[in-house]
Length: 130
Image (cartoon, rainbow, N blue to C red; front, side, top):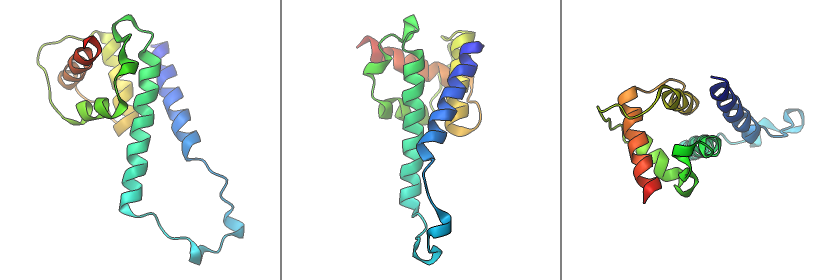
């Protein structure tokens, strides 16, 4: 469980740091600041998700079963996650389930389900072994 908490803290800190800036609101004329468009906000959200996945990959890359995960593109992993597909056969351990819980909490603010985690794990393993 200690590793689980470290992953969540590391991801949260990286995201907070990436969106922190040195904006000086006292010296800025608010009439000249345009709001972000929906496209820009979507890009921010995508960038945030990819940073979370990258942190997740770096964290679990030392686990024996995830040894080759850094060879998989972050976008490919996000596509697998967002496919919404499930796999009924249980192939992950409780520890791996906890890792995926942390990942999903960081990505979406809530946990996924075990069947979806099994699908994601299975697809990641296929890509690692290729």
